[in-house]
Length: 155
Image (cartoon, rainbow, N blue to C red; front, side, top):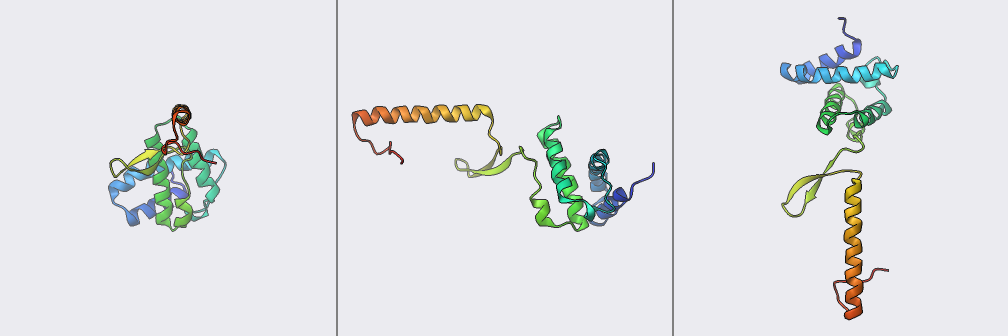
């Protein structure tokens, strides 16, 4: 099968900066991205001609596709790595994220990082509301008994 100019550009970029094993791993993920481009009738001449909005659309596509979160992260990371090695603006690439995918947040208990979703799950919203309601009720009961410093009223 004849290789597209964009795939040839990606292969040359990966060969320049990566090992043969990395090329074998990353190129199939790049081909998935090219399939996405073709399905949206886009055919950039080179990697640097890929619009920023297209990368964001691909990230959203990965978000809504029925696949595991880790698979989506690996697929997007492979595409962004190829773009970075090709000379794409790194500041733009850093801003391309999968909307619902997790980001690292420092965990105060273990001084390590845990993952937190950008959009909290419905169950965590409900649990947080219950905790707030229970705290308010406890403060209201305590305020009825005596003035306690743990239940300060906020304006």
